[in-house]
Length: 224
Image 1 (cartoon, rainbow, N blue to C red):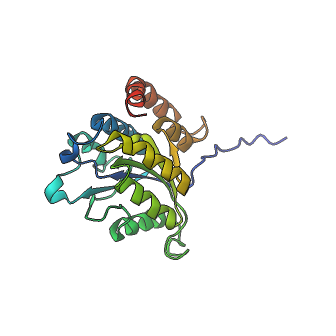
Image 2: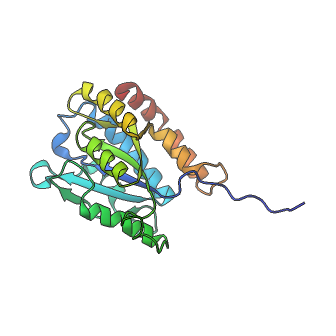
């Protein structure tokens, strides 16, 4: 019998994180804004542990401000490694799928050694996009629809999106399920990113989950 052990199998082949328009000017307008920010922070911490690409946008930054300061350190590249943090892209479209972000996503694939990144109509291999931000029924929805149309998989985190009006959120999530997006939660997707307790990052991820467990419970009770 062979003594070789099977390498752990990760469930996602090309995971990335999209952070949509979590800006200061929305703080008092968005339902449970601070709760959504907590989820975004947890996902970004996981992204650093797992060394995932992160794409961030702002909507009309000159009027609506920068991404919130609570996420600033997590959206800064780390000299010792961590997530691949791309420069934030400012936009006026109600979708993150703008040429600059599409080019960043193609660059992610090339940096992973895939020489076929320009194939499949310029889309490259499908990415598994983990999406957080605002507003669920506008920019999150249009981003998800554009990603799906371009052949990518989309995981919208129900505890990581919100809108000005609470009632919009459930309608948006129901529509996105019908369109082919996966609606899930931050803890579920973090474990799916690992796929196996044998992955090298398991202890760090479990530590993150335990550290944020009370916050996670509070966010789920507030947003869902």
